[in-house]
Amino acid sequence: MSMTNNYELYKVFYWAAKTGSLTQAAKALYLTQPSVSHAIKQLEDSFGLILFYRNSKGVELTQEGSILYSYIEQSQILISTAEEKMAALKNLDNGELRIGGSDSLFKHYVLPYLEEFHEKHPGIKLHLNHGTTPEVITFLKEGRIDLGVVRMPIVDSQLEVRESFKLQDCFVAGARFAEIKNKVLSLESLLQYPVILFSRNSRARMAITEIFQNYGYTIKPEIEVGSVDLLIEFARRGLGISYVTREFVSKELEEGSLFEIRLDVPLPPSHVGIMTMRNMPLTSAASRFIELVR
Image 1 (cartoon, rainbow, N blue to C red):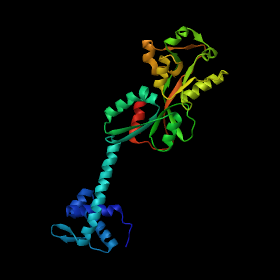
Image 2 (cartoon, rainbow, N blue to C red; image 1 turned 135 degrees about the vertical axis):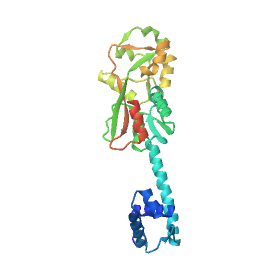
Image 3 (cartoon, rainbow, N blue to C red; image 1 turned 30 degrees about the vertical axis):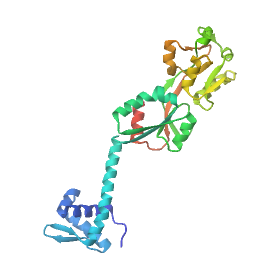
Image 4 (cartoon, helix red, strand yellow; image 1 turned 120 degrees about the vertical axis):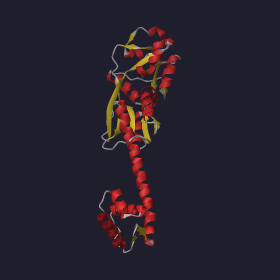
């Protein structure tokens, strides 16, 4: 017995059994009736069994044909469901979008795009994985997210990063340090004050450390915190001078609860990009989100 029957033969069998007519099966499949008859004959020959009785009204399943139909019917239902599922995914009627990034980038940058994406595609479930840039890279390589929103540069041959926008980092302080509000400080002078930095493994922390090293200084924070909200709050309360992203403290700078420290050297802007696995296909949801952001 051949166990390699073409799927098309089973499809012909299914429609002939479902309609009880070779003519109707031919119409449903856009085939000629002789082609349908030939396909059924092939299937019967492969099993060595008669699957249909021919009668004046069309065809009727034999006992053996009924047994085969009970299995083929289930497979057709599953295939139809799969096709509907694929169409829904393509049209973004359902599915999921998994994004990795830092709390601050989610809050201050990604959130408006997520709101717009959710309004356009409410059937897509959103999953956000929070972490530092190294953690987000791990999430992506382990297949736990579809894309990551991270600070650049990212040097990894397995990853592709599409630059999205720029951010400007700066030092800010509260009323306790009002005496330096209108002064221009050197890096050496800045280091005389208590500095508050983000945790060691963050991209922003690595960037400011490198900047100071390039000028021959070592920046040693008095306080280290794990969130941008704490950087902002600690600076407001006068616990030190925090290194933050200017765009993330625009409200505090405008209302005057914080002021930006002026330096005698420029701090280069940082670049944020959307990171994906290189040479790996993106889901329809991920592709649409990237189009929206860019």
